[in-house]
Amino acid sequence: NLAELKAICEAVAGPQPPSDSTASPFDEARRYGSAVFDKLGVKRLLVSCGRHGAVLLSAATCPVSSQSRTVTLALEGLPPLQLAVDQQGANCVEYKLLAPVDSPVSTTGAGDCLMGGTAAAYLKGMPIENAVVYGMLCAHAALFADTAVSPMLSPAVLRVKPSPAAK
Image (cartoon, rainbow, N blue to C red; front, top):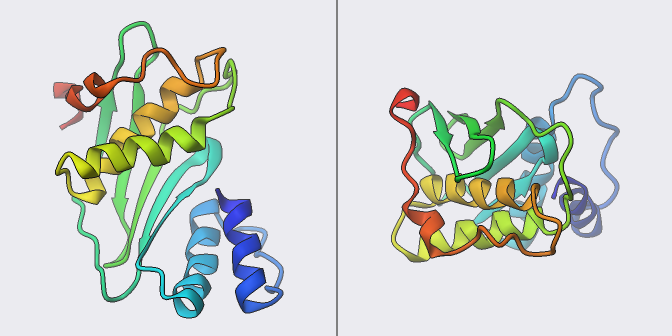
């Protein structure tokens, strides 16, 4: 998550100047991510920005490519996940939550579900930029579970198709 990325950044690059009060969590992730890329040689970072969404950052040697779009995905019994997927230059894709969950049952495990769902989709052959959407869906499901792992999470999540209106 963003707080963890900031801590890693400060551990490897030293104290960072204070944040601009108008900076979005996505701006902050880009700022801290660049220091991590420079110091650790990391190729990609996926950073949870909490109720704002997530951001996929790539080093200059690993550009990402995603068509800017709105995506709506739904799992039975849950409100739909609505995302604005926005390419921000050659090395950044933002996944902005258009309808953040105001009263989650629990946030425990949501970041783990983001990473696990993204990894599962990527290992199934999806481009990383699209795999993050499925990681976001897994994190969304976690918000409505009163257990550490949502019972809705299964390989079937990777077969959910965006709604026609979202294309």
